[in-house]
Image 1 (tube, one colour):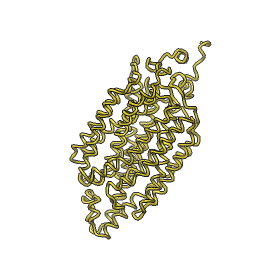
Image 2: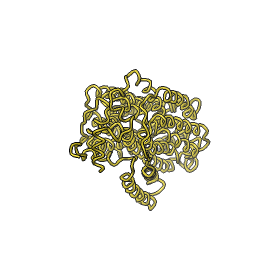
Image 3: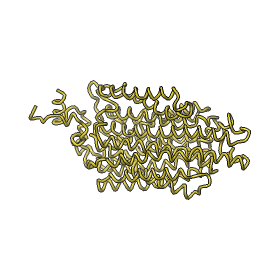
Image 4: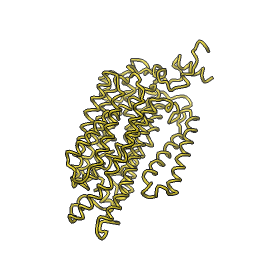
Length: 547
C-alpha cells in the first residue's frame, strides 16, 4: 500500500503541500533584484549570531575576573553553543512543516531577550542563563538563514550566496574579538550585549518587510516529533557534559562519567526507535542512508571540533600569555578573517560557474589540520608574524570547506526536506563545535589552575584569587612570577591543538569518498526526489503502469 502511495506521489506530486509544489516551477525562483533585500536581512541575522560566537573571546578574561568565575568561564561559551545546537533540528523541521518566516522572527526576538539578560547580569550564573536564551534564538538564526536562501535560489546559483554567507563568519571571527576588546577597554564588556539590539532591530525589520518566500501550507494531521526533539536534546547535553566534566569535575574512569556514557548509548538507541516510528521525524532515518549527507556531515563535525577547539580560547591566550591588549588580541585574528573572507567568496563564485566542488573541502580540511599542528608550536615568545601566518592558513581552509559542505548537503535532498537536511548537517557540526569548545575549555581550565597553583609562590594567585585573575593583574606581578604565569598558560593550552589534529586526518579520509552530484540548476522538488538516491521508498515504488 505504501509503495503504491509513493509511486502516486511521484507521478502526480501528491503528498506535497501546495507551497512545496509551487517551488518546483521556475516561476518560484526569485529574480536577483528580489533576492537582494532578503539576502541582506539574512546576512544581518547571521552576523548577529556569528558575532556572539566570538565577541566574548577577548572580553572573557575580564568578565570572568569581574564576576569571580574563572573556573566556570568555559560555560559562557559552551552554554551558548549547547542551546543553539539543541535548537537547530527543531527549527529545521518546524521550518519545513509550518514555514520559516514566523520562526525567523521568533529566533531574532529570543536572541534579543537573551542579550537583555546578559546586559543585566551581576554574576556568572545569570550571565550563563542569558547565553542559554541567546542560544535558543541563535540556533534558528543560523539554520533559517541558510534554508531561506535555498527556498528561492537553485543549488547551481546558490554557491555564490553561500560563499558570501561564509564571509559573514569570516568577518565576525575577527570583528567579534575586536569589538569585544574595544568594548572591554572602553565603555565596558556589557556593550557586547547592548550592540545586539540595533542589529536585531534591523534584522527584524528585514524579516517582517522584505522576507518574501513561498508560504508552507499546513499539512493535515501534522505532528511535531516531540520524542525526537527530547532525545536529541538529551543526547547533546550528555555529549557536552562528558566533554566538559570528564577529567575536570570527575575523573575519566569515574562512575559518573561511565553512567553518562551509558546513558548516551541508551538515548541514541531510543532516538533510532523513536525516529523510525515518527510521522515527521526531526532527524529522518532516510538522511543517514544518503552517502553524501553521511560523509559531509561527519566531516563537518570534525571541522567543528577543530575550529572552535582551536579558536575559542586563543584570544584569551594572547592576552594572558603574550601580554596583548584585548583589542590587539582581536587584531591578531585578522589573518583568519582575511583567509575566510576572500577564499569563501571566491570558491562560492567558482563553484557557481563550474558546478564542480569536491576538491575544495578536501584541500580545506588538510589546511585546517596543518594549521592546528602549527599553532601547537606557538609559545609566549612567538612573533606576531608567525601566529598570523598560522591563523591565515586556518582561515583559508575554513573558507574552502565550511559553507560549501552545507551546499553539498542541500543539493542532495528535495526542497521539502532542505530545512531538515540543513539543520541536521549544522546540528552535528555544532555538536562538534560545542564538544570542541567544552572539551578544550575543560582540559585547558584544569591544566591551567593546576599550573597556576604551582607557579605562584605561597599560593597568592591560587584558590579564590585565581578566580579573579585578569590581564591587568598579570602585568602587575613580579617579573619571575609573571613569566611563570605566562608559561602556565602556554603549557595548559597549546599542546591541546596537536591532540586535535587526528580529527582533521579523519575529516580528509571521509571527504575522499564524497560523491560528486551535479548541482541543480532549478528549484525542482520532483527532480530532487528522483535524484536523491537515498529515499528508498521512492526507489522501491513501482511504475504507475504496473500498479
